[in-house]
Image (cartoon, rainbow, N blue to C red; front, side, top):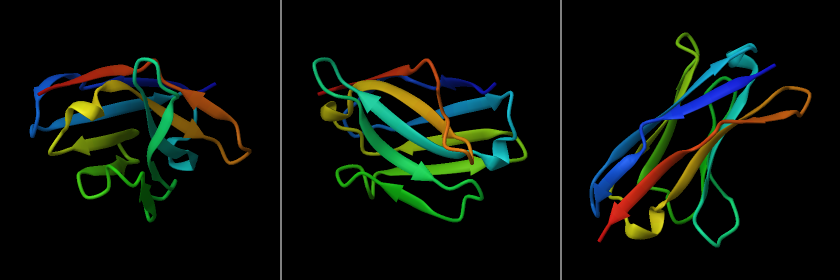
Length: 117
């Protein structure tokens, strides 16, 4: 059983930065491929960033690349999303997701990010 808990959301002005964190428990964290997703009101949940289990590969949604950085610390069992130069369109609930080697997905409860203009 995997449990994921996000933190670090909040209110920030356009151009500001936030660092989201996701703490994992209940599974071998180093075996989990991790992703960040977000969902704005009235919109579908969209994928934002991915990092492989070993942390040797990352990928980003087109509109956040260059601004967001996903990272992980397997010793601390944490995954992070550093968000710089935030824009109002980044406003959403951000979720972390872990995928086990067998393909099972586990989701955190989400953390709200609000970017004011």
